[in-house]
Length: 369
Ligand SMILES: NC(=O)c1ccc[n+]([C@@H]2O[C@H](COP(=O)([O-])OP(=O)(O)OC[C@H]3O[C@@H](n4cnc5c(N)ncnc54)[C@H](O)[C@@H]3O)[C@@H](O)[C@H]2O)c1
Ligand SMILES: CC(C)[C@H](C(=O)O)[C@@H](O)C(=O)O
Ligand SMILES: [Mg+2]
Figure (spheres, rainbow, N blue to C red):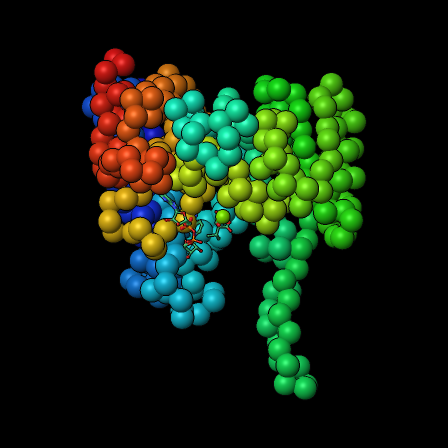
């Protein structure tokens, strides 16, 4: 089995705690012969700022470029509230996404049967829920120029963020979404705001053209992003794949998280274009949640989003579908047995720690051998 190079970037807050569980899982996979990973680690976010004055060092960027995949924890926190904007912890994450060309962010929202009662919605609305949000990740208002705060002659300040999308950027994310819909239920919702935004007008036109020319057998629905948020909490099972821009994808995926029980359940894969020669994609795997300063350092974080993100790495970057299936089954088993971190526990139910949950998932994988 070829050895694969993984770069672990735990980051800040609970990023460090949930990455510890990934480290244990990798050790188990290596020991059991299910995989062969060589890992390196580096700093990102506030911890990198404290060490180097930058949210990610050039050395860490080089390691990320050279790795077969990157595992990302989470960044940010109140400790870095006053650092310069360019060096804020989140800038490290955005640079990784941009410089590695990770334009496609896959955020699956799956409600495990055992968690149907932990969701914000009634059991019957979420039981069997399986949605894939495809978020464009390297464009839009996150990266558009100008992005500035200027002082006007009258002393007032003016803040500008710019939403920019090109045909090429929309086409390539639309293809990722249609390809996923093709192997799922065949339904794609494209979400934008063409009623207010020029970029929404172009988004709708381009997605429609890609549909007509390349995927006419699939069903395409256009939905305004505000309505999409509402429909997600009204009748979530009407959706299969949703494709949207960077900002709407950020918001809709946090909404979708609560259909699964917790933000601590939502994994993601951030993928680049396939290399023309090798077919390999640059990839980073990151839970959807942040550094959760309110619970950091207490062993309360749910590690499942990060473990499941690692599961996506096993599948998408390494073709280790047997190990990935076994990990998914282990997560379902542990939840089925009633183990709960605090975020998914019922009121009054005993909750386990981050490391107890991680350990139980690994034990369940061992049992399945
Ligand atoms: N990918 C990332 O690194 C990422 C993502 C989102 C937010 N952030 C950053 O994180 C910091 C805090 O942001 P926030 O509080 O708005 O969002 P957050 O995602 O960190 O937390 C939101 C809420 O969800 C809970 N939560 C999140 N993950 C959890 C988990 N695994 N288990 C249990 N509960 C969990 C938190 O306790 C909190 O109540 C900010 O600096 C923000 O920019 C980073
Ligand atoms: C931390 C922040 C930059 C990030 C984003 O907005 O993309 C986060 O919220 C996410 O969902 O990954
Ligand atoms: Mg977010």
